[in-house]
Length: 333
Image (tube, rainbow, N blue to C red; front, side, top):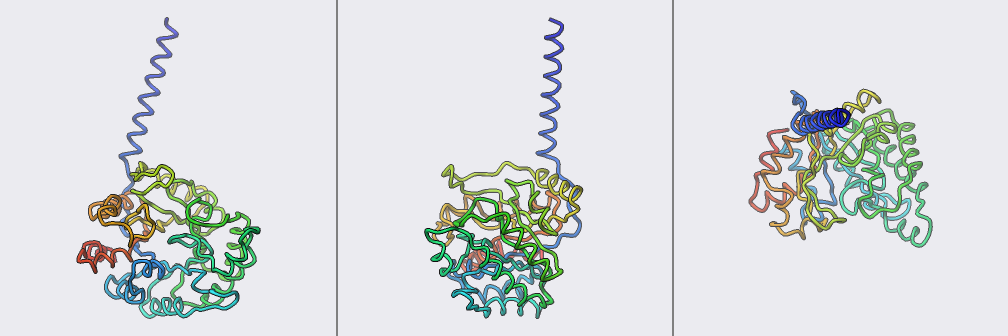
């Protein structure tokens, strides 16, 4: 009986300790950074998906929002529509406009660079891959080399992001081999001395691969999403401390900086093209209150560099006489 009593006390003590620890992790957060660098992610394609004039949106981001940190996506299919035939006009223009204003640029390179369908392989390559091996290592390395060599003298570009969550199974993508991604990083480091960034899932990764390959670890932070697997909308349960302690681990073990490269600031709908998502459905995952909550959450997670994901949508809402997202964002730039 005495042994059973001791076991009960031990179990109860451990349970209380576990519950207290869990409560601490859910409600504690580190001191908010005094100085936070805010930026946005910009996609020419996303503007086009939303039926917006992408050049006008871009200039408004620079001149009205007065953004000083921007992440630009080099969509492969737009730049190399035919094999070895490159069209740099649009990306040249984006980078030159950033340079004119002293805006700091992260340039995203690779096949999987963000925005639906996530991978942006040109049609000539997808035709080649049909029914054959999914290996496109030679083509992607050549594309990355061309991009880096073209823009490595830009005074605005301060870092190269290589791929976007390459090992996270999201989007319509051929399998991306770890060996290929490693070669991509090695190639960029051989071509230029500026830092490389590996963006990994904030919710479903511990960022180990990112820390091993890149100079800087980038992560994502989403609060309300649509699950294709469960066919429902979800509020993700992770507290700010979940991100903070992973960030602390990477800093202590790998001596790497961690930045928030993608903070959800737009809806996540069942249909990935927001133009086809009714406003009532958009509000399930993003409204003005949720927008402000996401910002506070990111600050509580202890990040000092934060890039908003959704600036093109803010502009659309502004056009629709809902300027509150756009106007609120001005406070951070």
